[in-house]
Image (cartoon, rainbow, N blue to C red; front, side):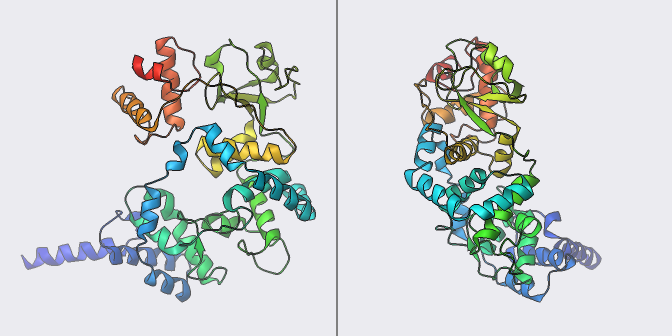
Length: 392
């Protein structure tokens, strides 16, 4: 009996000595932190970073925010019109002018147009004014220990501890609830790997140095596959009838093909073939606003996986680059939050993976809707309507 107890004790010690990435989420918090500390120490984190980890505590506010992202239940026009505000357009134009030389350097070095960077800067923190009030280390420790989505946050812990240990960030650095830091809300992995000293002072300060922010943001965007001097989105007008099953962000076709199907510029002029391929995104169905999405738009989804956020950021960049306000048109009635949950429940029952029944029209739900529209003989535009819900 004693031998079995000793063996069990040895096994438990072995488990707690493993790096946290190899441990189960949840469980005893202090024991879990010991695993994180072992991994951090093996990665070269010294006493300053390890002491910060030892003092880290559970942040209930971060858990609450992770479970309540109601902003993404908004339809595209509602979200975009709120986020693309007169203030952001005015401040964006002013900052593009004020820091024109830095934006020009970023464009030349990384191939990312100024309006792209400025749009993210404005959307994320209103150009540095609202950088977040969450204790970043506590938030990341909490979300990594939590079992809902630990894989998203766990990979950020050791990089954050490294930044703290090197004196780049203070142990009590504040940021967004999900661990993003600075004026364009950069995650610790990107801060560590993509940080650029834009003002030449020998350090990367993404909270206070605008040149560092602009250059680092451009470097991050470029690293995700941005194609120099190419477009990202383009508003278009669609006809009343066309092969709707050919639409969708990922189904990229030559502009000449879209032109053959009578897709035009917003003013009705024919599309100018630029030699590139693009998908046709219909965020609110065939009767709502329409946008051609090029390869560069996929980089937006690397920044934020919400299609609504990504398209809003892309459209804000076009506005800062001189484009007019998009035409909301007259989309068909969509679903309420509860109706969307009912739809997702029905889709799950049919074997579709919708991610979560959360009332959010995400990528998986859109794809399931398109397949059911095909099966039911409805126009395939990925926009769920009361008619579709009733037919299901």
